[in-house]
Length: 220
Image 1 (cartoon, one colour):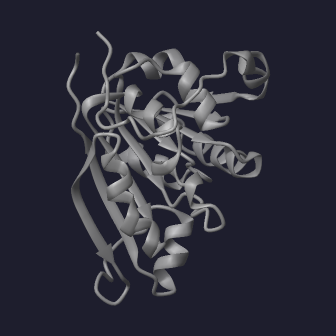
Image 2: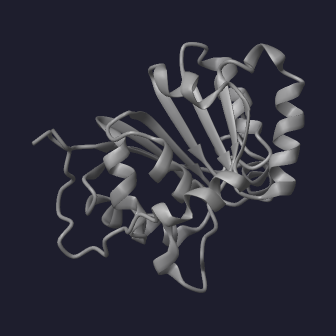
């Protein structure tokens, strides 16, 4: 039985591109745990745009029972992630590090209703074209199909208007806010940033907006 999300009539539909498979596979690089191993374990966590791998390493250390697929498109950042993972050999069977375009990789490599958590931390704010922001892209409809009902999506940004509009756009995909918080250096001095971008924003006094969304969707 396929899962469906709510209130999607007004959204642009995502179009899968199986014709890109060969080219995409040639460019995709995976280190750490094999993809088959990661997909066979639960809970399954996916991080999109993991950068140099600071958060995936920290997360895997703190959650040893979870399987983590961490995806980074930029070659330079992925190379640093690979180096960092090599320095933590005990995590090699808990982290699947993927150098690929996350949209195409997830669409073709992950089965529906299998992801328990999605992490999107400090994505490109797309200030020139806000329709490219994650909650306004056609791929979001595909991403929620890949998530389990009741699954979580964790999102963070330092951009005020991105944070202000995210809940409304996310609700169109059946994602509801379970938790939201604003963090600043003045009020949250003990907070530990999860990424290098977050550390930079936090230390220069910017507000960090954190969200936990839950997928409210039933099987039909």
